[in-house]
Image (tube, rainbow, N blue to C red; front, side):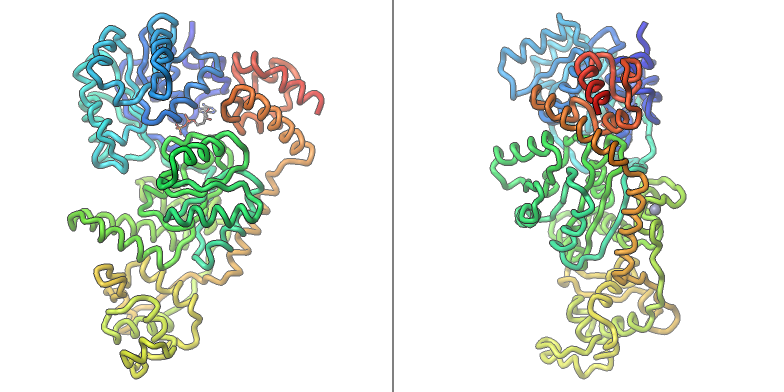
Length: 599
Ligand code: ADP
Ligand code: ZN
């Protein structure tokens, strides 16, 4: 008799469950509805696929994107699982055949979009099918509170009344408490279980660098990525094209992606990113949802996102296979001003704006943190843990210096110019520069003029960033980013408090990346292992071309790494490799064994 354990081992080829998976499976097997909040890469798909294979009646999987469905379905078929899939990219005949594979062919899973499911005709066909379970992927789209509400998802709340006997399994990687309650209420009237799995993604390294020069910093970073595939996020469409060009000129396989491109080009670039190795996607946030490529090795942010939620979701696309992946964020004062401006310009009510400003503050807190960054992140999501050892601040703790004197120079400049000017002007006044504006306003006659003469401009910019992030000064967006003094700054001006800040000498950045590289080298493969891995990758590429599916559908990076470390030479040993199940062994086992034997 099949059990969850036998299916995960024989069908999927994994030695066991990941944390959180079994709890969800057990509840579903027990007949309960479940909302599972699990981080990207936790392995949500198996949580419903395994029960679906054990139920008598079929399971309907509701998924928002064709690309996402296609990869799921291809992956399942590769493991010998029968599955149907309806979507608009297929002809009517194909869709009928897919439907029949469920009604007559023994397929236990049927994938489709929410709008296709919720038509009158489909719902009455569903009645006859009498599903045991409805799976709602990307369930946060159900809620108006969530980050990506979709009207076609709202309609799914009718399912619980239409199919009172079917359980609902809802999955999302992002949902705060309010959103969770909303989803559970809508999808199963709260009559089920909400299971929240820890948010931590320990395989993602975290780092933040103050902005100096975007192109230069990007190119420096790229030198450490060794031809692996990754995403570079930009704020504007124009910049995706610009930086894709910069990378291409430097010899990288880089492609732009944004919502303003012709849809064919966009689709083509996405396909290449999914299928080829080592492609760097330079994209706006239009790229991401539904990208389930498990071997994205880095996510580089050229600008700050709007919130920690958005940031965590974006970096979460790296390293879904559990292998090490790198994330880095660049941030500068202009970005902060621009983000504040976006919030004020979006025309929503003041409560909403206030919330958005708070969210942005949390992100700035992350960027300016001098302690473990993962602690800041997890704390925000309501979890606590000790220092992680895998962020820039853990690897190379910043030195804190007393910056009371230059801070006073800046704050006096802010105060004496009437709290009406932005960063550039305030710094110019403090440093005693004679710009046109300073002459125009006679700011060279102020007492504050030139008080901070001894401090370089980048130093002053860093100081303002840290003061803004810690909330002792503010940027007033209704007045074009004018800097204003809060209580904390007034205390410092009055000599009642000191200002401590991180020493941002560039030496530190170099030291940190040297250390990180050293850590990488220690876990690195020997030359023999490297050449075996390369051989296995090219074999994988041949098979992937043959079936016209992305390489990870054949075997994931994690599976190839496991092959390299176990070097199996027999069938039994090969079946012991994580990700090699019965069907995949039949398809590819001997070919990979041969490659290993002759290495
Ligand atoms: P999520 O949807 O939560 O982001 P996926 O379901 O796409 O995650 O799974 C991420 C990766 O982890 C996939 O490559 C999947 O095959 C792999 N995976 C899932 N469960 C396990 C497990 N128990 N052991 C090993 N690998 C797993
Ligand atoms: Zn850390």
